[in-house]
Length: 635
Image 1: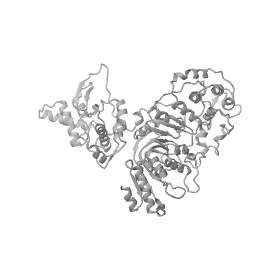
Image 2: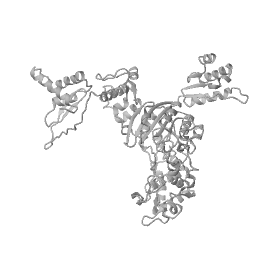
Image 3: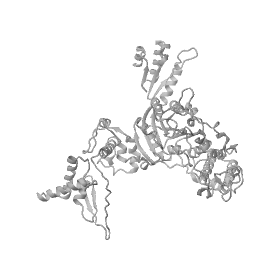
């Protein structure tokens, strides 16, 4: 009786049973339980149902009791089968239903139910139950309606009180309406589309449910995956119904993108090709000479190898034949993707090609066998590109951009070459290009992946000599600022070069931070959503990754001038129109320090053009104290 959630219920039922006998009230077990529930609610102060009281009042020895918590019904008793014994183990865990954690969780759950009832016209929700709603319907209809968090005052203003008479929404408290109802383990609840890829450092496979959930908070239809890597995120977006622009500078990533996103055939259409490649007789070639090792004897050159010779001989035969066959672009990509996936299954590495295992891995003894990739077809017309991300964003406009840049290490002693993705996956590029490049180092890396040739500003460990800021940090800021999208999802690791303070400033200056998901990789759990800069206090903890949903709602316009230093009205209209089409919420005419160089007439001219071009579509703000200009905007 000293612990457990039934302790207060047991005391209450015992007391009520004694009173019932003493005063001959003829109360039924259910009556006693219901009165006990009222005592729990009004005297003890616990906002719970009478479930515990019912089990205590109506329970029978060796007989399980079937009950319904709402509306407190006893359905039936079920005798135990013969030779069956029930054993109760006292956990010694102290629990209390009067704690704020329980009350807040219950309040949040009913807030979520109320939001669904008042937002969706679903017959299944009208009796205050979720149990009649299928999991499929919940995922399709309800998931995107529920907020990550909501302040009590905002909820009350929008929806009023909840349907639960036992709880009261506190205006000043912030509730996790969704998390309270379903828990923080979101990846166990959301189904993410199945995707396929190789072993990859920084893989977002476990984050796919959360990335898609953040995307659902937007009204996006077109998505840019700016650093696609294995293309798992692009695959997930495509399967979820988005039109995807898949981009990466790696040749092998482009091949994966073409294979999965541009394919319009079924898997069976490629069976004959894959079977033909599997049946080719092995042969010695360039890959065997450089990357094949004999498992039964010492390596002839003294270097560790990523594959055993019998598999590199198959690699040589298959890769040469792919080059000779009259394949279409997609067919070639499917064949190369199948080959890379097969090689990934028999390698002797830690998941990258910067170094190889001293002893052969068990999987390296398996035979290289190609399989048709898990292809799919969608109705959307996807695109695959292989461009520098800054060049790409200057030319393209999308609804949503997802960025997972190859962050460099924040270890001051770690040279960038050790963490560069071009170095990690150089062999996949070589398999795709089949260019037999010049090699260097013990891992026999491509010469063009050396530190001086394969540098990335996002992996750069040095500071800018002029600004004193890390070059990688400036690159992130430039990317977010230049992206022509209303929404951005940014993935960031606590091992990255940017500090929490720097990143928070970048996000604040370039849009509105809508939601954040925090992931603790060491514990392998997903933390609940957080608002604004709450995430900063955990950013310096190890093994943390964050997903930021950013809304870029306002654009500062720079007025174009012609060669005679006159305002270019056509150019200004074009700039305004472009930003409106990019999905901005408003336009700011920023004169800044140039205000003294513009005449009153010029400021009026600018305001008139902008207001005329945006009229009825987005609001306009003029950053000047000029009375006439402000008056013009009021028109």
